[in-house]
Length: 129
Image (cartoon, rainbow, N blue to C red; front, side, top):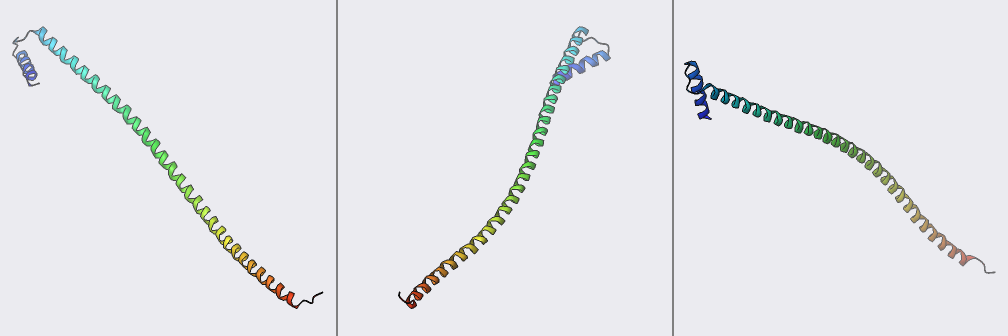
């Protein structure tokens, strides 16, 4: 690049001095070439910016989708936690009923045993016919 700068400096300083170190047609070709290169560079930059813009929009859409999914999952988790609590309350209630039922059944077995014992004792005192 320094060589080009020196060349341009020579061209412009020569033009100022009205010297023609390089023919004008060559200078025009060089300037045209620089313009073409600048245009190509601008077009490349514009394409890169367009591509980056497309990627940025895609990432933003993906971020929004992920945020929505996160929100949905958090809602589902809260609902599951509420259902779990409700089910645990029902389990606790059923266990309480189960303990009461088992206690009653054990008492019934005990009472049946006592009834049987009393029947046998009654049989002893019953007159034979």
